[in-house]
Length: 256
Picture 1 (cartoon, one colour):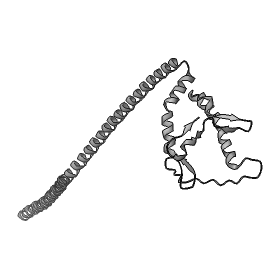
Picture 2: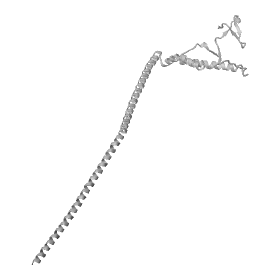
Picture 3: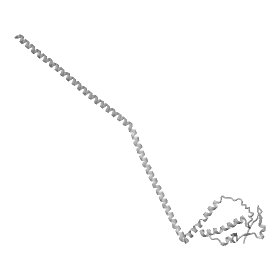
């Protein structure tokens, strides 16, 4: 009976020991699992910290880069803004100057046009008064033409003033046909131009010369001078010969 009791106690102790061993193993396993989880948690936290630190470093680097870029770009942006402002100011000034110049030119031209208009208006009034005073437009035209005849004569004289005639020699032995010669024909043609010229002067300028100025005889239109120069017989002593042997009067001539 004692043996069976001892055996029963031993079996109970063995079961207790096995149970304790199993408990210790489970405790160890639980401890290992907790340690592993703790390490995993620490690693996760460390990774998160590292990730956060990396992000912070990147943000800091970007901040520093932005600050440096801002420092470098600030003068360029300021210069660009200044250039734009200066260009806009210069353009505005040029526009103002152009507008002012255009206004001045317009005012000048308007004043000149007004002056021309007033001058022409006054001139028109004066011409109307002249026409009224002369009795008609034709008479007024003749009077104005007479006022400018001296200018026309001066212009004509200046036009031929540079032409020099040292000597004119005419050789004419006649053509053998009739009594007239080339020189006489030339003089007759010149004399025939006088009546039309006198008529033009009369019609345009109102100038009428005496009829005895030029006398045309015959149908051939030979000009016969009404007045000629004759040398008195008693003035033969005043007659001399020039270098070509022609007789010339020294002192005076008598017109008959």
